[in-house]
Amino acid sequence: MAARMNETAQAVEAAYLGALNAPDRGVEAAVDAGASVIAAAPGGLAAAEAMAARVVRACEDRGWLAADLVRMARRELGAAHVRPAEELSGGGGLRLEKLDRFGAATCVLELLRLWGRLPRITPPAVPAGDHRGGEHKMLGRIRALLAKAESTAFPEEAEALSAKAQHLMARHSIDEALLAGAAGAGATGDGPGARRVGVDPPYEGAKALLLDAVAAANRCQAVWSSEFGFSTVVGYEADLEAVELLYTSLLVQADKALNRGRSRSKNFRQSFLIAYAGRIRERLAAATGEAAAEAAAEEAAGPRLLPVLAAREVAVGAAAQRMFPETTTHRLRVRDGEGWEHGTAAADRAALGR
Image 1: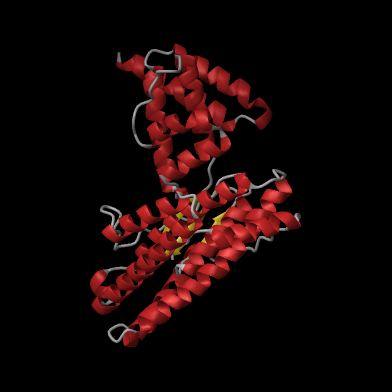
Image 2: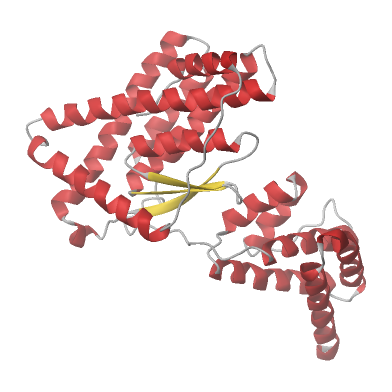
């Protein structure tokens, strides 16, 4: 029995290496051949799952998180590979409700070839003061307000919800900064960390521009990895929470506004999203300045707030520089004037969370 299991493991490893090293024009044949071997071997799928666990650990050693592996599966292989990717990257077994043995083996080999060829990347740091284990009540309230702002058909209601969300989010971030400043960095262990935020097609460049605008307004820095479909956002935990929350909300609102537009051309949509991101940047910058000025004017916060925020900005910049010592600038071109006008107008109507 042990000898047979060893033979199966060797056969699966050979199938994986054959798919991994196959030239692009020979991938389909190599995957088919390997899947046939796995499907026919006793315990072949179990051995393939064990191989997947090894490949996932190797990816983690090269800086990839489980969420990144799922994102790459969706991006490069398609929606049908998402659930198997979630199961395998999470250490679970592969479910076979809709797959026969050959189909399951093929899916696994395609995922393993994709993951096995991923390069080493900068791992995201995790803030020492990570609050994700239990969401702050304030963030729950902000999330609910933005959800209502996204769904309402009445501009006046959206504006009122937006104003409330802006106030709550700004105060939450400032209160977190003051609390950490009062305790001292050494006492709290709180420092800049990073999160990867998916930037999905189509129009990734414009979406990355929007994420950069949201990050900057929340005293974070975003670095877009265009080839991998995500941006790494560097900042303090409360601000990282705000970035993900607001970016997701603004994308939903942009999509709704785009679907109301008369044009469906690629140039219109690209120009719309570029203009939308630019106008959102302006609105967020103004809102951030107003919130900081209001907080600094309060007697208790005034003497402490500005130095604390300045120190955090320096710390975030230093952390981003350590993670990404070399970056390049990506330029986007506007090709549709009507799309630009509609995008600017949609950004003026969008509900902000800052």
